[in-house]
Length: 328
View (tube, rainbow, N blue to C red):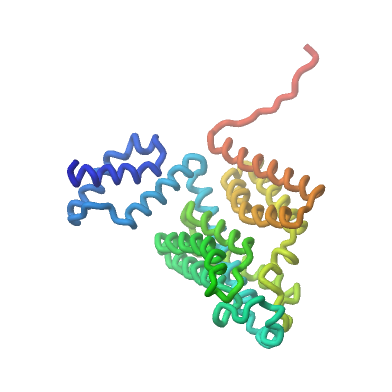
């Protein structure tokens, strides 16, 4: 088996990330181009960046079968705006919180179980926040391909931070799993498309940032004591409050779907998934039943209806309801 044959086999294996219908139409042409480039660069193996790019685009193509580009781009924009705003607020209030320095110094025994923290910060969440902010700034500059790299790194950081925090040399406490999972899910959603407008991305991020700061300020976070890494999900976005907002959001999505705005409905419904995951974690951890169970069922049904309406709208089908004539 020649070098070119081995290289072709590796490329075809990587292209399995794409759906079979796409491969049947485009695979041979893409393989030819990839082999020509590799031959011109005197390479006998695919580049790692090349393989990662093919895998990412293959996944996006699979997603595109079910979701149109407008939905994917809208979801990516909302995820980037939400993640950048949340990461910035988390860093200021939960990682840094300079106004609480005196309180932390005198309450070290109750503040953390270890003798020191992550350098000058409370926990290694600052690393994840930095990846988010850098990725957002690159998106504002139109460097979306590099933004995607930072978002992949953010996903990996969300998975690695709690593991590293358990090692013997780590003298810090990991951010809560809810915060890590929330930012990780937002990073994953940001990869599904490209924000259609950088101006709207900046404006949306500014609105989300202002809303979060206002909520924190209203809850007295600027006091002299540290309110904890889990304060947002315990006090501000508790299970009851967040559940009500999620139901309202899905009802709004259904309204847009019924009004013929399927893309907007799908963007709203899908963009609530990280919040719904955080809500579900809160319900499970607190072992709430009754109202929470009913609310969860209503949430899932509303999400299913919203997405179904968007899919039906895109497919060109419509459901017609007629009154049966009983007089015959």
